Length: 322
Ligand SMILES: NC(=O)c1ccc[n+]([C@@H]2O[C@H](COP(=O)([O-])OP(=O)(O)OC[C@H]3O[C@@H](n4cnc5c(N)ncnc54)[C@H](OP(=O)(O)O)[C@@H]3O)[C@@H](O)[C@H]2O)c1
Image (tube, rainbow, N blue to C red):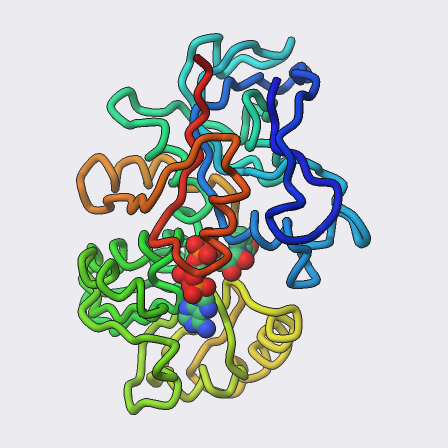
C-alpha cells in the first residue's frame, strides 16, 4: 500500500511517498481503509520536532514514521476480539496514540473509533476528533462558558479554534477570535463578535477582560494572560512552547490558589466527546470549516500550507483508492 513516510525531523520535504506493507489488525484492532485524514498542528509539530515535547516518541529521529491522526474510513477487517465493528462499517476517530493515517490503510484500536453517521462525508468526519474534542472540553467542560460570558479564543481560525468559536456562540457567549490577518473573515463568518489580528495587536495589552480565554497557541508570559482575565475568569492553555507550558503548570497553579482567577493547562481527553460533536454538527450548531483538500501524494504540500499559516479551519487529505 502507499503511505507518506518520514525518517527524520524537518520541513515537509522529508516526507516521501513509499510502498509499504499493509498492516494487520491486532486482536483488539480494526484495519481501516482510509478515505480522509485531517491535518492538525500536532502533525506539523511531530514532523518538525518542535516544540521539544514533539520528540517524546524519539529524541533524535521519529519512532512512528507515518503521521496523520484524525482518520475517517471503512473497516476492512477486524481483530479476533474486536466486537464493536464489522467489515464495511464507516468509522472515524483520533489515533494519535499510534498515528499512521497518511496511508491507504491503518490499524486502530476499536476504542479509538466511533461509527460515522451515513449523512456525513468522510472529509467532515476527519475534521472532528482532535480539534472538536479540544474545543468542547475547553469551552464547555473546563471553561464552563455561560450565556453572556466574554470568551476569547486565541488561535480561533485553526482546526480547534473554528469549532471553539461556534460552541461558545451556541452557549450564548460574546466571542472574540484572535488569529492572523488571513483568518479574520473566517472567524467573523462563523460567529465571532470581535476579531483581533495577532500580527497587529496584542490582546493582553488592550483594556478588555475575559471570563474565559482558550489559548491554542500561547505566546505570552502567564501574568499577561492573568491580567486579561475578569475576576473569577478562567485561562486554559492548550498549546505553546515547553517553557510556557511549564510556567502555566506551576505558576498557574500558584496564582490560582491566591486569587479568583484560574490558570490551567487543558490536557486533551482523546475521542471523549465524539457523540456530542456529531450531535452539534447534525443540529447545525457547528459547521466544520474546510479550507482545502489534497490527495494523499500531496501531504507535504498540505503540511507546508498549514505550516506557512494559510490554513483557514481545516485542511483535509482525501485518499483515492480507485
Ligand atoms: N493539550 C493537549 O492535550 C493537546 C493535544 C493536541 C493538540 N494540542 C495543541 O492544540 C493546539 C491547537 O491545535 P489546532 O489543530 O487547532 O492548530 P491549528 O489548526 O494550527 O490552529 C492554531 C491557530 O493558532 C494560530 N496562531 C499561531 N500563532 C498565534 C498567536 N501568536 N496568536 C494567536 N493565534 C496564533 C495559527 O495561525 P498561524 O497559521 O498564523 O500559525 C492557527 O490558526 C496546538 O497548539 C496543539 O499543539 C494540545
